[in-house]
Image (cartoon, rainbow, N blue to C red; front, side):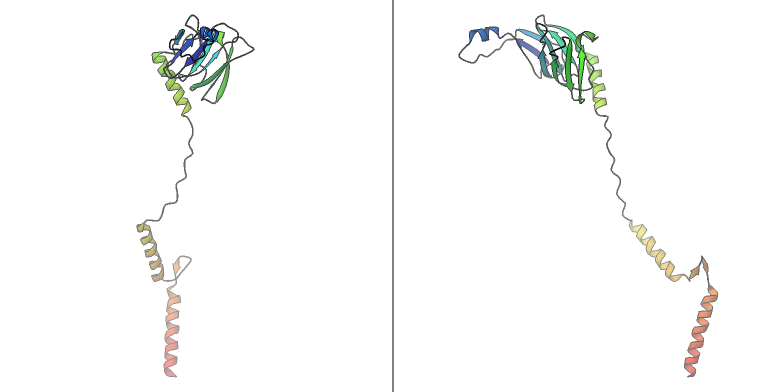
Length: 202
């Protein structure tokens, strides 16, 4: 048997025994499925047959779960919901009969045991929506680094204030330790006047 899955969330199982035994000279197009497995609610991304059980198949899906099927009876058996994102790949353990490996876009690979799962089939309806919300919330919780704001350019008002302060400093008398020195100014004026008188006398 060969199984296929796609965007329509349905798995089709085809019996190619007659095709192989017939050894046709031309390619054969299979238009009808031998079995149909329905239950997932999103895109099927990977399938793996069990090497230990006849007709046992595991599928993974964008609905965030992995499903084990009895393909011959078209029945769901076990559903795994341990990932926090869409599932991308799966592989049945070649050694342990009930162990399966699955990988998802939550950057992790899980190994789980089929018989220990409490759910039988993929979530449907409200449960599926809640699982999707939970998964999207956890995936989007990434901390983004905030850019430090660049230094602001001085405004025109600030520039005018600086100019006025400079002019006031030029016009104000000299100060020492915050106190003006009027006596020093008077002595300077008297000295200048005396020098002027002596110059005129000569």
